[in-house]
Image (tube, rainbow, N blue to C red; front, top):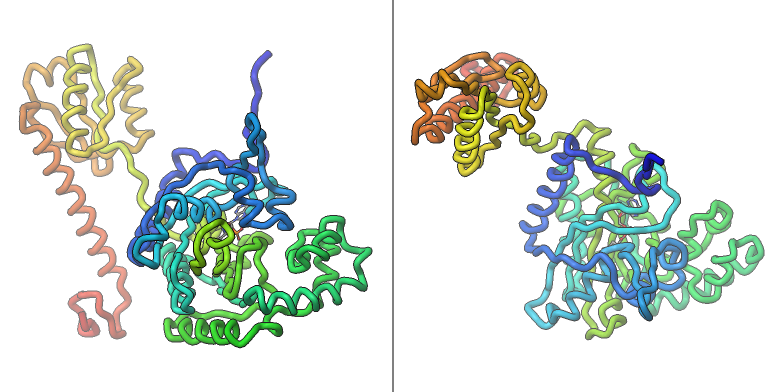
Length: 457
Ligand code: HAM
């Protein structure tokens, strides 16, 4: 019987034609994080299940409903549902928290959550995230929010709102939990089964339950922001002052509580309304108790993660630019075995120069080879046959303009190809500059460098 195995629900294939979009996001996130002093960390795809139970929290949806867990011999392992727990575990285990503070790390990784798949919600998804350990100051909160905002700007994204809230410290939380219990007690019987147990153990988790009935009941629940202690209020106010100073627009959304247990004080989300219900492209906050909870000293920390798929959906929707995908620089079309061997040697040389060089490895005729070169968008082609070998020179054809130049097939071949290639790039730039000047609308002040009176450039 023919095999017809499809990819699992909630996973995605990224095809070669789309990889440059991922590379764009990876490059911009990585470079921006580095410019803020963050260094990359890589952690295992799976961890001991206990790590997530203790950090993400036993009463969260992630732990209760969404983890992929396997029993291997006597030990339970879980595919990471997020990056913070593993990153903090790695920082602790490798002594990073004994080094100069603050420690700043970022990661790009896959996460696994057994959720109901829909647009922007996957079972395997990818995050760019970062964590900063060793600062209790609201200035650090402003710094990571500013980093997230810079990334969104550099990706060319627009209309993404920043929502902030404070969910206080364990002290404010005690009074708040009492108020929540009193509120939900009246409609206890209508809550889903999971939320009934949450009511006792961790009533705040009812606020982010995905059941529509629990959501409806929670609509008028008390807000944590009304229960903040003086220190938490002051922290939140200072954060707002710094955001204003940095020119970052925000809205306070007292309903944001985040779905993970480790948060304290500041929480935030960047949300777009343009990609449907799953519009949170970035979520994060402070978690001052987590490191201690995982066996370390008391080290205040914070961070965020962005969903790469959600960023890409939004970029596509908004027509953002991507890095140019790399195409074939030169394709050698060959006739006969001697020509093929020559092509192998020339391609090898050009690849040393960093060029993408290809030749026929299938054994097709000349016409089919040229058709293939066209299909893959080769910038240049060169036909090699007995004549070219005998004359030790061949025509290099620019596939866009149709122009041809003859290149000697000697030891200067790569250097000569390099010159032709650079000339083509410069021509392209000149043309682009000329069309920008031609297309320029005059009669107003500009700085474009054109020769018109209106130009200040
Ligand atoms: P999170 O809000 O659970 O936080 O996830 C962060 C981001 O990952 C979300 O805003 C969303 O863009 C993306 N995401 C989450 N679940 C899915 C899914 N099923 N499909 C597609 N994208 C998804 C965390 O994971 C925290 N560890 C963030 C953090 C870092 N807080 C402090 N440091």
